[in-house]
Image (tube, rainbow, N blue to C red; front, side, top):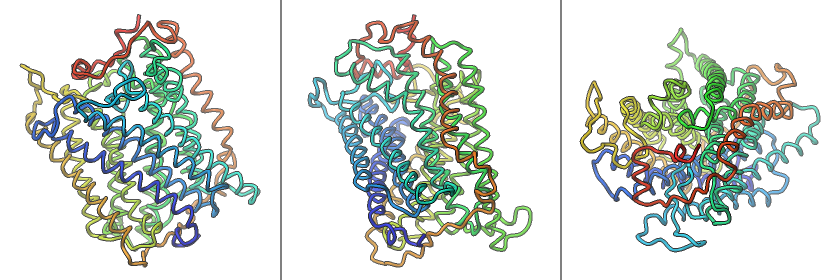
Length: 585
């Protein structure tokens, strides 16, 4: 390995930079939509009317939780595979092909969403060019077919990216018979096995049901079936967003701490557990849905609790690695070693603060997973609070902090504004604390999510301590700080790319773990075995519930027409209805 990735692998570095550029563009648009939402919901300042609020809400979800995270993921994983295997892809043209598919797909979806701001959107494929269906795109809300085509192309591109990385590993394995899979490549491959298995649901939902329905090839669909297929995919995708952060925590964070990863075998076990456990739990998002037996919901709840295990193992391994680094730097005492950590390094501080928020967000996830407690917070503002703590900080802040370490290696330029970068990551941390605190508290008293006007006429929420005005102020303040932090990050990235200083002062080599792969059983690297077990668990979790849904309401539902995205649809959204109960016998 070299200290500078761009010098050793210039062709691969161009691909990684292109993926990061796409990610950062999506991040900027999504952040802009985020501040519009925060100020609109709190009635502090309204840039748009409440109908267009749902265009903003859709864009915020799609640009941030799909485009930003996954474009960054493919860039980061291309770096990880190339650097850890010390070889490029089998065919770089194929690599650019899957990136091109992802870029085209995201562009089509973006055009469909942004057209919602027009007073009279153009007619495309026989329908108005709109996609105000939110990130979850529940039927029978209907987007323009172009939106679903864009999503399909994006998913196909992501599948091909995984195939490309497997091809690279297979070529490396032929060149290095008998060697264990390098840890970062192992993380990439297991993540993609999880994605291949978990994305089957949403691919079937789009290609078999929703896209033909939007093109009027089929007359109706089964809302509960497509919703369940979405959540077959929907909880796995949370870990698909999160595992790039895990890769950085396990590989880069120990180095920045001044030491080495505590245990390579524990890291492999964690990623295997995500392969096994991430998909058979999606029904815990559907506790309130009729048409799914309570027993299956209970099984999903039980399986979800097992996902605490890889999180606890990660907390132990990462903190132990940080402590080892701190003591290598002269840290002493039971807790004083924390002072020896490089807190002035924005890459380290950002990742450490992201991990702290992740721990807090994980405990709130236990509330979401429990059937009886979930009834209190379902469809309330608590849920966005949890999402912003996990994907919005554990993932997003880690990716931003990781960029401060990785982008100089991709450009050959010194990071501009290290002190400003430190302010940026701290500002994000403070902003998310204010925002999620207000969301959690408001959610506990029943303030709904996904609404332009959370206050209903003639009704007020009993907050107890404080007031709705105080909670709204916290939400607006937190959203504003997050937007400022996001803009600072993008400016620093832009300045770094065009910085002419060719001394990046970044050592890109990663030291071996204290406990390496040789200390673990060979079976951990048996990817076929873990895929087979994961497949069986998914079949056990979903075969009977899906069969029951089809038996109740038919494969294509009961002649359910499209529900137009109009003011009437907004009324339904205001009251949190999700279009399931009315269509299930």
